[in-house]
Amino acid sequence: SGGIGFPVTAVINVNNPSMVRFTFTNAFPNRTTLTLTVNAVNDIAGNTFNNGTATFAFFTPDPYDVVIDEIMADPTPQVALPNSEWIELKNTSGFDINLAGWRIGKTSGESGPMPSYTLRPDSFVIITTSSAVAELSRFGNVISVTNFPTLSNDGDLIYLKSAAGVYIHVVEYSSSWYKNELKKDGGWTLEMIDTRNPCAGISNWMASTDNSGGTPGRKNSVDGVNPDTEAPKLVRAYAPDSVTVVLVFNEPLSATSAATANYTFNNGIANPTTVVAVSPTFTRVTLTLSTPLLRNIIYTVNASGISDCSGNVNSNGVARVGLYESLDSLDIVINEILFNPVPSSVDYVELYNRSNDIINLRNAYLANYSSTNVISSITQVSTEDYLLFPGDFVVITTDIPAVLSQFVAQNPSAFIQLSSMPSYSDASGTVIVLNQQGNVVDLVSYNEKWHFSLISNREGVALERIDYNGTSNNSSNWHSAASSVNFGTPTYKNSQSRLNETVTGTVKISPDVFSPDNDGFDDFLTIDYQFPEPGYVSNITIFDAVGRPVRYLQRNALNGIRGTYRWDGLGEKSERLAVGLYIIYTEVFNLNGKTKKYKNVVTLA
Image (tube, rainbow, N blue to C red; front, side, top):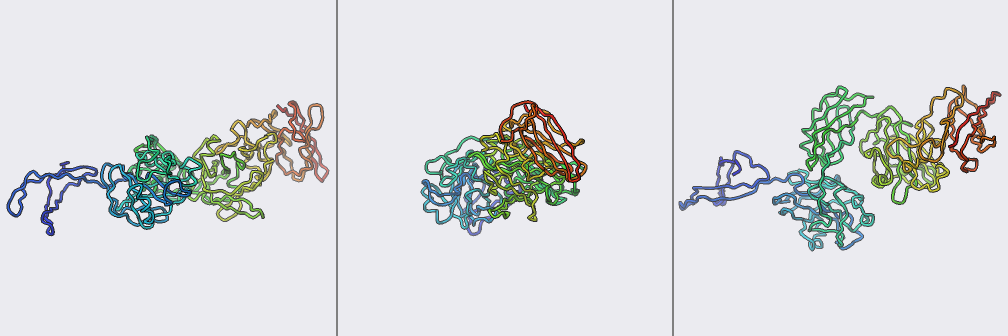
């Protein structure tokens, strides 16, 4: 049946003459049930056999025919299950599958082969070490393998590979997948919600709700309908060399569709000559170019016609790519710091590329100062190639969902999540960025007193850089994020950002009207100066409309040729001042006896 036709050969097994091997010209289609009809066969006594039929299934497992649907990565403290690590497999196909020769693995190595075991459709089997078989057998069918990989409590990548070497399922979990602070500390399993949606990641997993802590050998406690309806997204790209480009997607792809999709470049780069979906995660596609990329050019790559493992096809993904340069001093600067988060959130550090170069964040490191003022807690910003383009922001944190629950991020893909970060104290500390040579790229020794003085509760308030080109380690170049943005602007321009204008006169103020209410709009006064030579000293006093001094802003301050001072609208004792007109009285002099006085009028609103 099935259009296979007649066999071309029929060979009797000499060791067992009651068995015959048939060979066909046409290949059996996968995942089909076929019927073989036999007529006019004689036995050795001459008896004729007619109309004999045999039905059989031809099936070779494809990816996701078996899925890892439950993971016990951290069995302690125990709830009610054995103190052993294990995973559970589920057969999602409609065919029997023999697991002989299959393996469980991770990037550091893989298990020995599984023994012969037939996994029936819609059934489960537990995979573990031999020492755990006895206890786990109480819950269902168990297979033991040698070198069962140790599962990390915080997160890991584990894969299931068939005897033919095909990656059947890959899961890269993290402790955030539990979605439960108590359960992620141990004793509970991670369960897949919808086994027909095997590639969705965190959105399709959560901690078991079964009172025993898990459901080995039976249907998951969180089992439900959770379809994947979104097409894969092209997140970013990078170039390891001038003729190789790697595209990074937000979810696993169909390797077949990735190989046949459309990839186009601008700036004279021809279509790639080879395309390879990178195993085992299949979230990356490597393109080989015939035309090399050139330095100091930002290219655009478009990718379309790529489907995920649920069959959703993307229409057009766009990413920038180019050759990166070495990271040097102040190429990237510390742009925003949340060092005193609310209890439900975590610290973050935002970096900004103020250079004209493409920077690879694999070559950047965060650090702090130890109690003895030695650079310590050095942490690589990205363990893989991650390009930061001129004028772009990136936010480093340990819990992206926690940050997103408090702040609005205009570019949610501009986050890098680390398992741990250098500690930054709520009161004061030092944020340091190093390059691959260990040289300081930028450094900010912040203090909670840098915040706007009238903020009574500084918890959850980020400190924002005012001027990208201004001095990093200077309190006058930092301000509390505005209340209108919920006190933080991760991944986009700071609410308090202001680039200094080129001063054409001698002393200028801006704006003419300012309102220090921390709403992100004209929260402080900027006093810009420019002198023909260095060495001038300034005294800046602020008077109210009737001539009373209310703030001695600067006393004997040594100036450069060009610079900036700022007034936060507060009085000498950090008190709130009345609205109205104020005089900014600036007196400058140098050691050669040159002096000059300036008066500027501003409205405090």
